[in-house]
Image 1 (tube, helix red, strand yellow):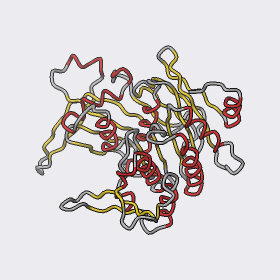
Image 2 (tube, rainbow, N blue to C red):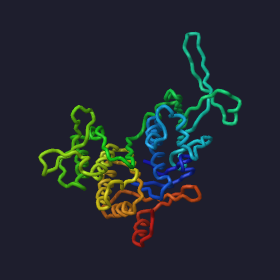
Image 3 (cartoon, rainbow, N blue to C red):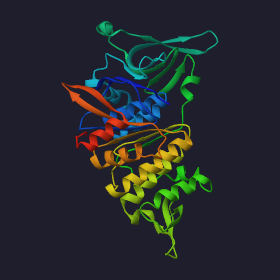
Image 4 (cartoon, rainbow, N blue to C red):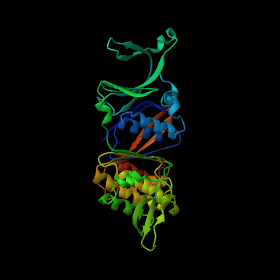
Amino acid sequence: MLNSLLVRNYRNLKELKIDSVNQINLITGKNNTGKSSLLEAVYIYYTKGKAESIWQILNGRGECDEVVFIPALSSLFTNRLTNEPIVIGEVNSVENFVLKMVNYLEEVETKTTGEIIHRKKNIPDDKLNNYQKYKTGFEIRINDAIMFIDKQGGKFTGNPVQFSQYFNICFVKAGSFTANDKLFDSIALTVKENYVIEALKIIEPKTERIAFVAEDNSSERKAVVKLSDQPKALPLQSMGDGMNRILSIILALVNTENGLLLIDEFENGLHYSIQEQLWKIIFRLAEKLNIQVFATTHSSDCISSFETILNSPESTVKGKLIRLDNINGMIKPIEYTPQELKIAFENDIEIR
């Protein structure tokens, strides 16, 4: 689990340092304070800069497709200026996780055996004017291991093992109201399926079973729910955004044992009256399954329900609220301990 967080030169997070994070972290702040960017940075860090992960982020924001992947990467850098690298990790960590754009010449050598060797010669920014033809790629460095991505995809140098090993991780996006059937398949007929049913009962207490079934002449499977007072299963989509949002969150949660769950705009689709119950389940399962959680919110109701569970006598999980403020173009964090958060609500102090 992360114990602190450093994000440098990623989108509007020019230099963000959070000295400590806990097992469950709720991030709040006004628009354009980098809440979603923080989640993206953590996602990239934990997936070791995997090209598919970065593409998902860019595509989710409508910033690129597969054809223009390399040029679109500039949108990840603060002010789209790629002369400084992106750094993500823990504050004062010995691990060096760096992402940067690289201009290079490709040198080709044909050996006497007929083998063709491709080499990459980096060009410093101040020397670019000396070359008429050069290429641009994306370099991801973890200590002495380097992964380089160009138009043809990724190729490894150094020690690629460091790139292939990362925790279970799920990222529930702000507009996610469609659950993943593969996530359900991985926990079907296990005790984790019971956790899913428990969460759905927050909204519909008559929930007995859930399954994913294919419609006629279609390979796509959609969620259906069996209620105790209905003879046939009902499409989950017909039961409102709340049921669909809870299913997306809880399926992601139970699939990240010993890993990380990211939830953007926690409150989306959820009435304020049920958020406290969902937080209670998240706190309990995060502890049981050893999961670290980062969630964002705009909602004071969400913060209130989070505070209630965080400071409840039954809670043994460490959590905190982190507010991001935009101060003269720099994003600064304000960290609230459980006690500080409780005092703020008792004294009607606005936090978001």
